[in-house]
Image 1: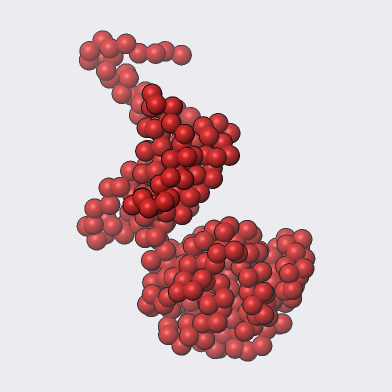
Image 2: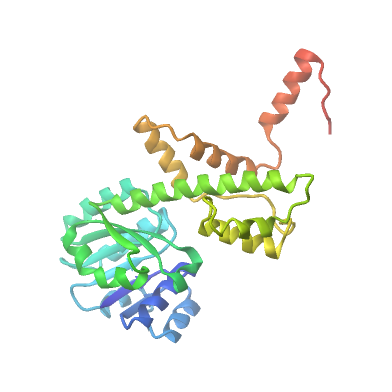
Length: 298
């Protein structure tokens, strides 16, 4: 199949490489010219602009957008839509909020342009292992893109979730669960790191990969990280979030669904980004004020 691909970051480059290996014709574009050249070295057809991408595709066109979520995706979808025609399709493979998918799909439908949201999981390992794809949109354009999804995903690694936004909605929940799993591992390994037994954490992580009920790919990655840096001394405990956890909590509030594990995991990430917590200084001040408890001053 023929597809335009916009965004050649770590995931995007691996995705076009995987597509090219399976003999799809890929028209690749990124604002960084060197990345376009790299894609060309993998067999893709390079493009110099969004307009150039569209001009090199045959109707009905399909354009996959893989740029950072938020304004970059919104701007790219809007710009590409002005270049496409009735019957063409835009696929958003980034981490878009599902309510934005619903809005975009309705706007594009007025122009006769199809919209598909593809929640994509797999990270930098996707080139080798494939990407788990959670796809939302109308049945006909999804069916038309099936060969693309099959190439990008491992066997049984993609599925149509439902209407517009369903793909990114499921990906949002997926990432919320991911936050919670990571937090559970982090807390358990911290406890073992402070144990009087002087435990080999890398060995334990690897052990748990063999028959344990807590085995997972995340645990396998933990074992690799601990093998390379047993006490994680090379890292600072600063953890970003990409937004999906916040969106999931907001959706849970709307639906009166308790998500305490995810909430704790997200708030722990917030705390990791503070050099010093004002709240904790307030706690110290109050304990000192009502009970004369000792405090540490600067």
